[in-house]
Amino acid sequence: MSDPLLHHGGNLAAARARFGDGTWLDLSTGINPVPWRVPEDLAVDLGPLPDPSLLADLEAAAAAHFGVAPDHVCAIPGSEMGLRLLGPVLGGRACHHVPGYRTHGAAFADSLPLTTDTPVPGDAALLLANPNNPCGTLRDRAALEALLAERTAAGGWLIVDEAFADAHPEASIAPLVDDARKLIVFRSFGKFFGLAGLRLGFVLAPRPVLARYRALLGDWPIDATALAIGTRAYRDRAWIDATRTSLADRAATFDRLLETHGLSPEGQSPLFRLVAHPDAAAIFERLARAHILVRPFDYARHWLRFGVPADDAALDRVDRALRHG
Image 1 (cartoon, rainbow, N blue to C red):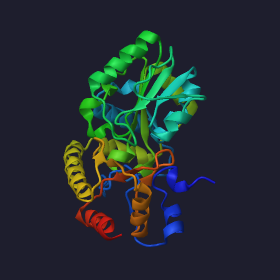
Image 2: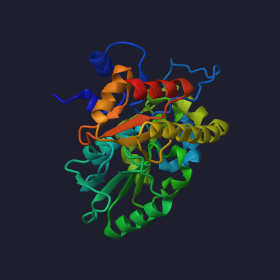
Image 3: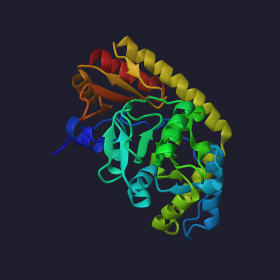
Image 4: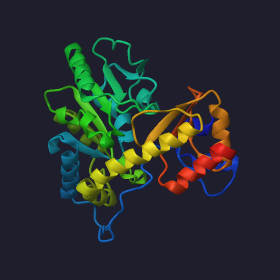
């Protein structure tokens, strides 16, 4: 049986089973540890079915945040679901960049794993993340536009998973989505806003593609709570701007802490850092014994991914665990 801690982040139940109960600090995901605060006056009526106008409001608010027209935005119950529906929606051949998010390889049947410098075969769809997960590598907008031009010339789709892109609006290719381009972009609500349990994401695509998604999702795909919270959060420009700054500041502070322990953080996402170290397994165990969970990998045993801690108290816990075990 495979180790559940090697499959994905956030598996505190498996961590507790192995290392004991206690007050755990979960740094195994890339979810903002300082979430958007749901206003007390945000009342949600859970009695009736959600009004379709509320879904339209949410998609309009998200579209303004992404820089794309609202009719190219479809809300979904988490970007994970959107990725897993790609095969039925698009069909055809596909490939995905590795290393990358595990679900990318499952989005299409027989998807071909490719390194970033391997040419894409024929008219296959190419699926990649920007910034990448778990490496945190960020491609600039010009590089993505070049990839889009290459796929367009070959007759294939470019599909970009921008689950962690809210901190990098300048790199997002979302504004280029329209009916004339074979471009699909996925966005996640929960990571940047720190509310992953809400299960809310978006597909940005040409309208014929979105029509297929809506047909598969059926009526009322988003619950009333997610509709209300998502709409209000995407319109909170002050919080969004302040959070972009605070995430970057916390990541820089965390980088300095890791470096004092001889660890070299990699990646440009302020939500997580990747560390490559020959003793990664021992470091994981040391942290876990201190009830700090980070993300190990079955395909790269020398890697650990650290979510960026929320505050000084969390930083101090990591510092003490790395220093004393």
